[in-house]
Image: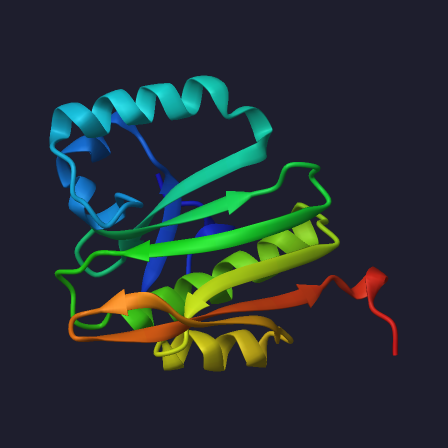
Length: 170
C-alpha cells in the first residue's frame, strides 16, 4: 500500500510488516544480521510493546518495489522525534535513497504529526542526506567523533535538528 504523503521521487514508506522478515538484511537495525525466524520474533515483540512511541517504516524503492531500508521515528512524548535510517548494505545508491526518504519524512513530521522538533541521526559521510537535511532547515547540533565503524576506518555521527515553524525563534 502506497500513500501519497509518504511517497518521494525514488522511494515510498510503509509500515514494516511480518512479510518483511524475509528481507531483514535491508532493515535490521543492528550490525549483526538476523535470519527470518529472529526477525519475525523481533517484529512481533516490537509491535506488541511499542505503542505510539515508535513508528517503524520500510523504505521501498519505487522502481521495483524492493525494500531498501527502514526509517524509525521515536517520539516518547509526541512533541519531539528522533529519526534514524537503516539502509541495506547491498545497494549502491543508499545515500541518495535515504536523502529522498528524508525529504518525505520531515514535512510529514512537521505538518501532519505536528512535532515541535525533529532530530536526524546520520553518518558524516552520508553527503546527500546531509545536503537535503540542510535544505530542509536542519542544523548540526551534536557530533560524535569517529562513532560509526566503516570497513577500515571510522566516521563521525551527526545529530541534525529542525524545529517546526510555530516553535522557531529568530
